[in-house]
Image (cartoon, rainbow, N blue to C red; front, side):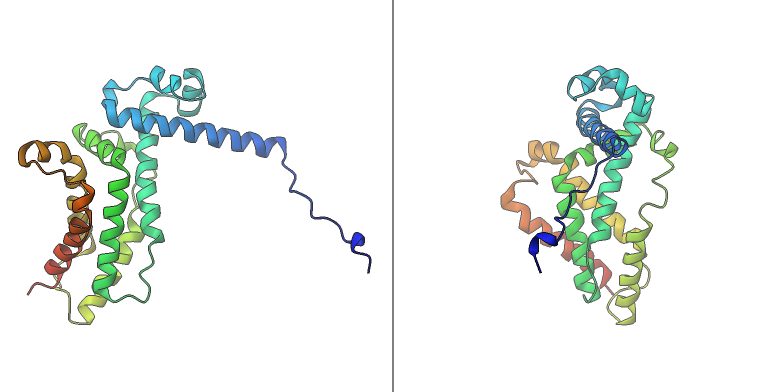
Length: 224
C-alpha cells in the first residue's frame, strides 16, 4: 500500500472561543500569582490593586473585570492557596502502605508543601489576624479538606484494627498536629532565629525536622 495514502495527523483546530478562554485563564492565573505575593507581603490593608496591576500583563480595570473588588481578589488568592495544598494531598499514594508508613507519608507531604509555599503560610496568618472574616464568605473552601480527612480516618481505622494506634484521636486531631509543626516552622522562622539563633528553614536541619515530624505524630498515635 502506498504510504502516501495515509492521512497525516492534523493538529487540533483551535477555535477563537477556545483561545479566548485560554487567554482569560492565563490572565487570571497571572493576576492571582502576583496578588498572592502582594497580599502575603503587604497584608490585606497594605496591598494595592494598582501595584498588582503594574506587576502583571494587564490593567487595574481588567483586574476588576475578573474579580470585581479587592476583597474578591484577596479571597480568590486565599482559595487558590488552599486548593493547591488540598490537590497535593489528594495525589499522595498511600495504597499498599501500613498505617505507620501512611501517616509518615502524609506528614512529609505537608512538610514539603508548606516549606515550598511560604506565601500560603503568610496568607493564612493574615487571614487569622482578620478573624477569618473573608474566608468565611468562601463557597468553595467548606468541605475542600474532606478527601484528605477521609484518607486519614481510614489510616487511623487500619492502625486501630492492627492494635497499633490509640482510639481517642480523630483525623482532625492528626491534621492539626501536622499543620501546627509545619506552619510554626515557616511562620516563626525569623523570630525563632532572632531569639535562639537557629534558622528552622536552614537546609542543614531539613532532614532532621522532616523525620522529627513523622516521629512526633507516630509516637503520639502509638502512645499507651
